[in-house]
Structure formats: structure tokens, C-alpha cells
Length: 137
Length: 135
Image (tube, rainbow over all chains, first blue to last red):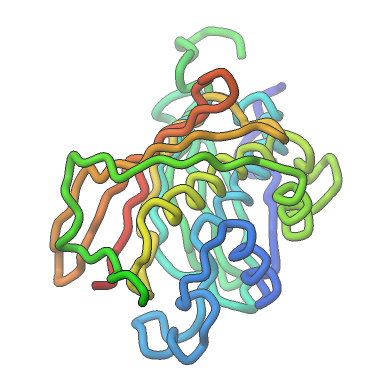
């Protein structure tokens, strides 16, 4: 794959609805009321139900596959922080951007429709077989 | 009578809390595709779906092992080393170990190490789920 600049990279978006959160709860077997019970969530610092954090990780995988190919998902290191919640009605978008730290290291993020970051982190591709500077990808 | 929830004070750093086997099956695939798309370009029946299944079954295993939980826990951080993508039909054995806990700014932080192996013991993933524990 040819090198692309950050502005050329593909993003992946998802509209988060109550149905999406319910479906993801069934998929993960995670029925924490902070995701599903408005009355409970109102009494927490979140104020209202939030999506599962790992739901957004699935968008990051889709973003990485679209930009770098399926094979990169079989060998990577990921570190992310869930810095702001994702609420019902949010349209979230996963992005990745090259860093100068290493050829296979990228910033990853998920942001909302207002541009606010919800997840930030880094991913290192080819993590167990890192490319040396100057190696061909 | 329901069991008492696992509280912050119950976590013992260094202790293996348990393991369980989850299966990435056709029902999980259908549910994933209903949310994230069913086209090849969505990663359906492919790498994005498979990588998602590593995370989904990591979470299922944690929820099965550390139970019951107080309501309102929040996922704060995630580290994950993905070394192979699970395949549909594959059984995933996941072990869960508490590696750290601390109080910080009146919040209860718990780190759980999760390691997943697939068919024939092949390494799939390992990582750390960092949670803010509710009680």
C-alpha cells in the first residue's frame, strides 16, 4: 500500500441509538445499567445512558482495516483512554493519523459530531515484527 | 438469594480471578453485522469483525468471571496486544487476573489483565482493562 498523508485517510462513522446500545449489550452480555437505564444513569456523573466504551473500538478496527488492510489487525498494540462518554444520538467517527515517532505508529481517536474527542490513543502496527527505518512496507 | 457484589476491597492484585471459554459463533457474527455493517468493506466476516470479537469476548469473559458487579462501573482505559484475529467458530479461552488497584481522586481504579488463546492454544490477545469501580 502506498503511503498516504493524514488528510487522505478514511474515517468510519456510526450513529449511536438506543437500539445500537441494546444490541451491543446483548453481544457483550454487558447490561450495566449505566448503558441501559436512564433513571440509574441520571444519578451518576454521566447524567444519562452512555454507550459501551468498546463499541467505539470496533470502529477503530474498521478504520484501520480500511486504511491499511485486513492483515494489520492480526499484529498490533493498542492503548486508548476513554476520555468522554458517547451518548445516545451521537454520531461518532473513528480516525487514524500517522505519527513521527515510528513508521508503524499511529494516533487513533473517536470523536463526536461536535468534534469533541471521546477516545484517544495510539496503535502500533506490525507490533511483534517492527519495521526498521528504511524497510519497505 | 443473590450473591454479594465484588467490591473494590475484594480485589487482590496478583490473583488470578478465573478463566472461561467463549465462542465466536454465527450468532455473534450476525449481531456484530447488525450494528457495524454486513458488507465486505465493513469488515463483515473478515478482520474487523474478528478483531472486534477479540474485544467482545474479552469483555464477556471479564463479565463472566468477575460477577456479580456493583452497577455503574466505567471503562477508563484499554491496552490490547492483538496477535491473531479470532475466526468464526473458534473457541476463545480467556484468563482474568487482577494486576493493580488504587484509589485516586476518590475514585477506585482496578486493572484486570486478560489473555485470550484460540484453537490449539494459539495466542490471540492479551491486554489490560482499566476500570473505575463503582463500590
